[in-house]
Length: 623
Image 1 (cartoon, rainbow, N blue to C red):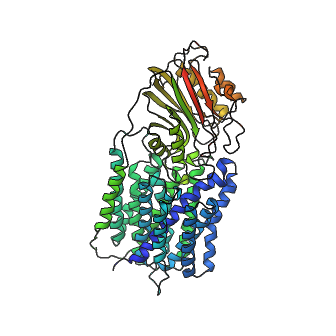
Image 2 (cartoon, rainbow, N blue to C red):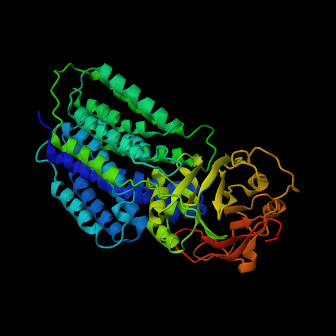
Image 3 (spheres, one colour):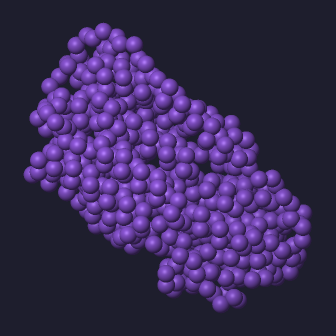
């Protein structure tokens, strides 16, 4: 028996479009509806949940109408998003439309086409996302993306048609597992720990691309193979849980194998000799709720104290999938002859193409360049995960503006390198390529969210010191750097304070120790008295969440730091659309003076950047 190609491709393309919309919907919740913390999280959660609950109204419609109507609405939403129309509400409606389409698919797609369509859609979406460097077509302006978007939508609609007769539907479990599979693959695909320093060669990228190529071939092979025995499902279930534990603990490349194990388990449930069930549509919508709840509980840990590590969410979902699949296989398994698997040239060709394109798109890090003279330019910018005031991804615009300033040092806060909640982008790598700079990443909340230094100056030392939570669950750190300007050492403390009342004394002590000549790694552990001599000029910069008149600022000044921006008009930096207060700072010790300082009005974040030109002086001078 062959796999029905038309329904499988239709399902795969529909999932690609739905995931495109989801990667707009999720960050829009934070940047547009939530306005980065201004909206109560309970209200934001209720708004998001509504669009996953509304699809249950499809139970009142005929499945064929849900299939056709959901597909048409999904395509309309995708086209409107490309046009930039009402991003938040169009993406919200698009999520509901995609789930309604899947409800119709549960009644119309033949059993053998389901695992191939589901895993093909998830894999294809991942491949396209990686090849586009994480900046999906929906975030790209101009006419260039339109032919690809319109062709994908037209191909999808040409395949959408209700079945001519009653089909052999997949079991309800198969459709229910679609939601958990979206969650696990979505987090695993981009949530692995990236290199903390600019790679000097392409081998890490080549290894990752090669692994993804293996996964693609494995998915196709597993989806085409009839279930062999419950032992096979048990092995895949154990491997899936192991991958989830690995993702929770280290988030490394191997977790992408999760896609392969999910493909095998999904294929096993679809091929078992069991009744299809009466409610496959309800099952797929229920799986969508699992995706929503799991996703928001996982990322809520950065704003709420859940009492347990958020990685437990992924492990729990993986255990749920494994247990359901293994138990079902034990109860319903009927021995079947082994069928030779023919992988074919297409997946192998895609695998080779993936390795080649990703490798070609990974140039080596720029060379280190010493700077002569005593003047240098520094930018400190909270980029809000790269999303502008209009809610659109602005990584390339941030890089273009920063490059025009010809900076020597760029300090970034709220750098996201792979959160599914924010669309799965590596902000740092993208901006670094646009600037032509090397980078040093400092994880804070987890391994893919934190702060970063970008520079081509010689960096002698760099170390990240975790800061106390002080009842605020989101992690914070102080990236401590020693680099050279004109042959002289300059210390930098790059941080994003979450709880200034408790963290300000910590960074003050680090800055004091660094100024006293301590190594970057030791600065967070050695206590230096307030009267210690300044042996190395130090800059403390970033989003300090501290106003110039706050008590925390007095703590920083007591550590020998001065605020040069007060002499340049004390420019406010927040909020970016109507700045009223300055919470982003560039503070200096003796040995440094500000030649110029400003906070340019830019719409690329909810903060304004601080652009300064600094000059080295003698540490015996007051600046």
